[in-house]
Structure formats: structure tokens, C-alpha cells
Amino acid sequence: MSKEFISSPYLSDGDNQDLSIDSTLATLPLYSFAADVNCLTIEVVEILEKHSKLPGVILLDQGKFVGMISRLRLLENLVLSEQQNLFLEKSLQLLYNYARTDVLILPETTPILVAAQMALRRSSELLGEPIVIQSEAQTYQLLDIHELNIAHWQIRGIETQVRYERAQVQLIQSEKMANLGRLVDGIAHEILDPVGFIWGNLSHISTYNESLLELISVYENYLPQVPTEVLDLKEEIEFDFLKQDLPRAIRSAKSGAERLKNLVSSLQNFCHIDEVYPKPADLHAMLDSIVLLLQSRLKSEITIVKEYGNLPPITCFIGQLNQVFMNILSNAIDNLLNQAAYQEFTKELWGDRQRFMNYKPCIVIKTTVFSPEPASNPETLASRWISITIADNGPGLSPSALKQILDSFSIEKRAEKETSLAVSYQIITAKHGGNLLIRSPNRESSSELELFPNIGREFEILLPLV
Image 1 (spheres, rainbow, N blue to C red):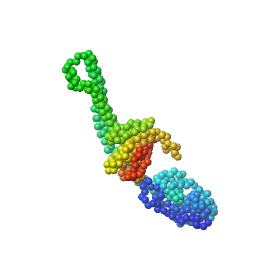
Image 2 (cartoon, rainbow, N blue to C red):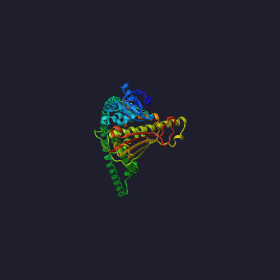
Image 3 (tube, rainbow, N blue to C red):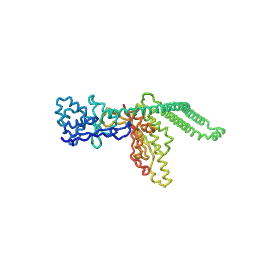
Image 4 (tube, helix red, strand yellow):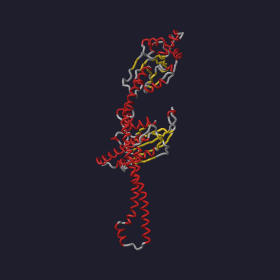
């Protein structure tokens, strides 16, 4: 056979980028060396002898990939074979049929950490075999397993350093939050005590008021001739108005005391200090508490619509999940308030009032339980999930803004600068085994935005029901 069926060996240097936790196989040095299965075995052996670092050869049949023989497997079979000369003078196909083994084929976009784990899952006799890397152009190259292992340990070192730095930052932040939580909880407790006295006494005051008014009514029935001095006093204190307004004043005071009590309770729940193990919690009560704390920012223009489903209690870290709800709802409110400011500017500058006439800023909170479609690996999925969506009808996200948010979820970006959404993503994924999804139906730039009720942003929190 002619050597035109054998490509010249070539070693690529990868993309010359520094390794990171998200680095893929395309960043590693890859060997290009392919031969047709009809080539003589001795021709490939001669090339392997000249290039000692070649890990093997890609086998092609009329230009199509059929398999791979590693250097170790090829030479091992030649040495052990009693008919060595027979194999050398025959085609590669004969040797391949004799020495065929399972080949690990991975796309070049596979993360190095994932590839290393898959390589380690192979049987012991295959652990030293090279990996076949498939490019997007459907070409095939070889990755020496030693190059993969070195890159794997380098990335593990980077990951360990990043985790250490994050752990230090989180330790300091957690201590600050714990101290703040204790301080707020103490203040809230001091507020709740007098509120409790007020609330309890108002109930008695309401009963006393009804009893006194009933007593006065009985007196009036039995004293038809009311003394002038009593009539003058009733007129001076506006008794008829007082009789009608006093119950209303007591009800108003009770309502204020109840609101203050709920607000302080919500503050205590928000500053909840999580223990080592998660606890069952009512997600609807948690969401209501956060909405109550944010009530002062909502103003009268922003409407909160709650579409709650029937949710069972879910085991979670209450304080951390409260922080997630606070971050996402605050983000939605900021989006709507920024749009309100844009509207006012547009109205004043251009007098364009018709454009925003039917627009009502709104945040919709929806909860539901669902079962996902059967996946390729159902063992890793919970049978039921809780979905919490928080959507606003403000401006959507541009592609660059959405990419920036998603990029901030990576470990490197979080180490550089932790945003509220990045912290939320970490809490949902790492602490609760869930996911945080972001959708934006309208991704036009702000200068081209047209406001309609169906545009905006939607954050979906997925939590497994274990």
C-alpha cells in the first residue's frame, strides 16, 4: 500500500489559553495522525518509532473514522504475537481486528474536569489508553492521557485555591451576617414585647368601650329627663360622633399594631440564622414576609400578583433562601422603578403620554409542583420539583446583559466580584441542589424598547422535593 493513505504526524498546541475551571479539551495539546485501515502495519510502526511521543494512530476507512489503536496496544500485540512478521506485512485492519478495544471518544468542547472523570471510569486495562477528540468539523485527534491528567491536577489546584479564597470571604461575610442577624433579632424582640402589650390591651379596651356605651344607652332609656349639665357635656365632647368614631379608632390601632407585629416577625424570619442542617419551611409564608419587608419600595404603582399553588413544606436553609427571594424581588423592583423613571423622563421631554397609557407595572410570583420529563440519567433527578417564578413586566435584558449575568455565576467571576444574583445562584445550586434560570423574552437595547405587558424578565427557582 502507498503511504499516501497515512497523514503526517502533527502536534497542535491547543488554544494557548491559561487553564481555568471551565477549560475544555480544545485547550490541550492534541496529536493528529491518521492512517487508512488498508495501510501496511509496518508503515505505521516505522512512523511511531520516529515519533516517540505519538500516543497512537487514528484509523480511517475511505476517509471515515473507524477506530484507534494506541502505541502501547499496537506494539504489545506485535511483541507477544508468534507471527509478528505476518502482522507487519499485513494491513492495519487485520491487527485492529485482533487488538480491538473500547475507545473513549469525546467532543473537543468537553470540560477537562468532566473528561478526566470519564477517563477514570474506564476499566483498569484501558486507563493508559489515549482519548479520541472529535472536533466540530468532524475531524479526529488523539489526546495523551498523561496530558489530561496533568491538566486535571492543575485545574484542581486552581479550584482548591478559588474555594479557599471564597471560603475565607464567606467566613467573614457569614460572621458579619450572623452578628447583624443577632442584633436585628434582639431589636425585633424588644419591639415585639411592647407591641404584644398594645395588641392584648386593645382587645380589652374594645370590650370595655362596648360595655360602657351599652351602659350609657341603658341609662338614657331609664332617664328620659336628662339634666342640662349632662346635655351640655355631651354636646361639648361631641358624644354622638365619639360613639361612632371610637370603635373605628380602636380597629385602626389594632390594624396598625398587627401590621407592626407582622413586619417585625418578617424581619426576624429574614434574619434567621441557619443551623448546620436544613429545616422544613413554608415557602409561601417566606415569600409573603419578604414582600412585606419590601412594601415601602413597591409604592402604589407596582402591583404584586400571587399565583400560589399547593406546596408541601420543603426542607431548606430558611435564612439563605430568604436572601435569594430578597435579591430577586429587589432586582425586579429596581427594574420597574428604573422603567418608571424612564417613563417620566420621556413624558416630560417628548410629551409622549399615549405610549405608556395602558402600562401597569406588575410583579407576578407563581409557585407550582411539577414532575420533569424522563431524562437520560433519571437517577440524578428528583421525581418532583418545586418551581418558584418571579417575573416583572419591565424592560427585558439585552443579550450582552444576560450573558454578563450568566457569566457571573461561574466560580472565577464570583471570586472576582460577588453580585446578588451570583450569590443567589450559589445558594440555590450548591446549598439546595436546585437551579436558577433567567429568561427575557425581549432582548432589544433600551433605546429600542417598546413596552407591552408580555415583555420583561423572569427568574425561575427550581428546588428538588426529596
